[in-house]
Image 1 (cartoon, rainbow, N blue to C red):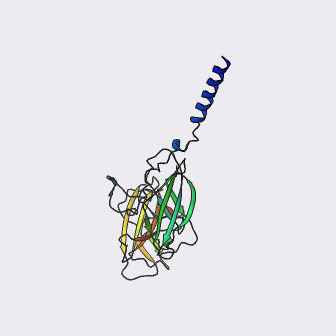
Image 2: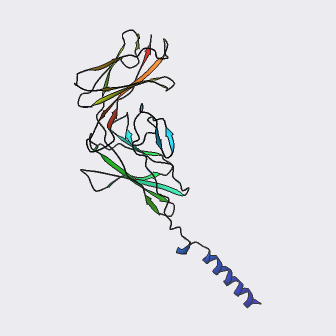
Image 3: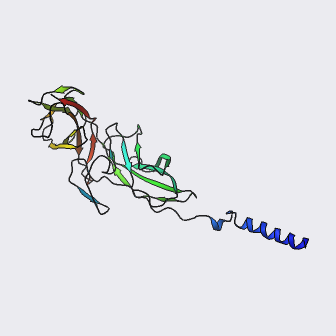
Length: 256
């Protein structure tokens, strides 16, 4: 009887070891589905575009890799990941002048939907390319596609002053572009509900010191309304289809 009990105990112990997960055959060796970065689809004020079989009304949140208002930085977004067991990702960057990819961000949480490259080495009019490695909990990873963007320096908004109260009569929106050398500008106007009220693209034929447009008539605004505006700058690279661009800092003012 004691011998039988001993044999049963041995069998149980062996069974525990065989189910412990230490066997390499039990490990997950499948990498996550390939992640997809979102390329530059256009800019706020452009006509809607079709991406992934969906029609998109472009804005700063959904237009893909782009410049941002807060600095000479580049935002790199990606589509939602297919796998649910992903843990983190690494972001890599390269360029014509830095052809060997460098790691610019490691261990970015997989719950993130974008990464903002705030490196102080970024230079205007240089096309920077990005890709990511997406990891699962077992250490397997997959490599994304590559997206690229080049930013310009920002315009400076000159008038009206931030937070001022101004009359609509003869009101002009003014800005300067020292060092930007853009071929076109786009003026964007929103109300306090973040509704885009107006957009106008101005092509530059002869550069001037101060650019301006009259505040447009017929907008659905009233006395006391808060107005938000900015100016985006664009230029064309002869070898690249998409435009280089920048977004000025936004300003607000009130209507008398």
